[in-house]
Amino acid sequence: MDKNLLKNYARLLVKIGINIQPNQTLVISSPVDCADFARLITETAYEEGAREVVLNWNDDIVSKLRYLYAPDEVFDQFPEWRKQFYLSYAEQGAAFLSISASDPELMKDVDPGRIARAKKTASIELKEHSDNLMNNRNVWCVASVPTPSWAAKVFPGIPQDQAVEKLWNAILTSVRADDQDPVEAWKIHKTSLKQKLDKLNDMQLQWIHIRNKLGTDLKIELPEDHIWLGGSDISEDGIEFIANMPTEEIFTSPARNGVNGRVVSSMPLNYNGSLIEDFSFTFKDGEIVDFSAKKGYDSLKHLIETDEGSRFLGEVALVPYDSPVSNLNILFYNTLFDENASCHLAIGKAYPVSLRGGESMTREELLDAGINDSLVHVDFMFGTPDLEIDGLTKDGQRAAIFRKGNFAL
Image 1: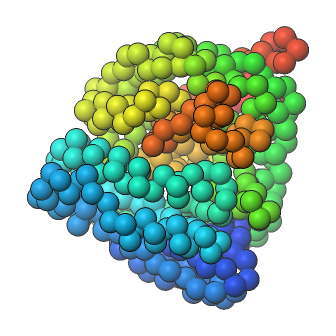
Image 2: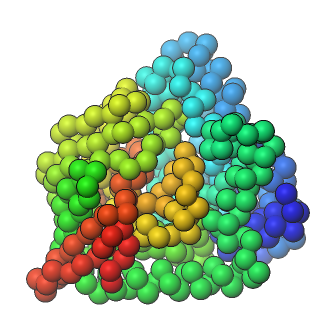
């Protein structure tokens, strides 16, 4: 790949994504397959004034071997040092950058029950760190770069090096790193998103009604004093950052007990290394009361049975079908990209910051206000070119939110 483009991308992540501050520590979590780019981010962060860059490596193949051969009790244990690793750096005011890149089907031969046990254990032990990020107490960003196995899934039937190059090009386009002035392009993009979320926030919608020809017919009530968010976030210390790159969404939290109807997935979901395809959920008073999946049923079952909150929704996000990521016409099998090509919902925990004053509320206060809590937060896509969304404003007026898959605001 063009080294200048890669450097542009690294600089975007450091300067726009996490917005590194002078003398700030950066913690990078990365697959070993992405080591070259992680090193480029490291170099860029030091050039931009970072105090220290700490690498937290992971290896999906080693993880698979653990799932296949380790004794059962291993999946109910979590090392204290790992928990303290995140908490100690968070206490120092570190920024956290995660590279999300994996083989979408690496874990297809692994017992999903073992993965679910391990993920639940880790989620319990890392809940304080997760809450720190979801409340924007620390700056954080999730991004991605190609791996050979992932590229082969996205672009099958061509030589591996060509598949990796095509995936690189798609990623760089989706994050605007190939623009003549990427930083300026992001400023324009953030402004465009803000204009839309300002309109939605002015409406203070009581509910939205979502329909399409796939079979989605879902009514979602919104909590009083909900906030639509999108583009950049602001940390507790007043630092602007972008939590996901790319990002095309505008999102808020549904009312926990106010979701009724059926939603049908429009894309496969890559969850814990297994693909879940052609699935749907039926909701009553906010809770999933029925679900189906043609592929990955057991993985989906384990997801919604994680805890009480995993049977409820924590996010509704609006993404125009005519978006830069969607217009690439690529199924990425990676939620970071696919969720920015499609409207989506999230099972599980809601972002407290999507409620006015939510970041300072206790868990009980948030639940009373209709904001869901869970150990998980998993996005799945429902957007289609014929998607229609209507809403009811605070003053009782019906409003067209989406028509033919795009904003009608």
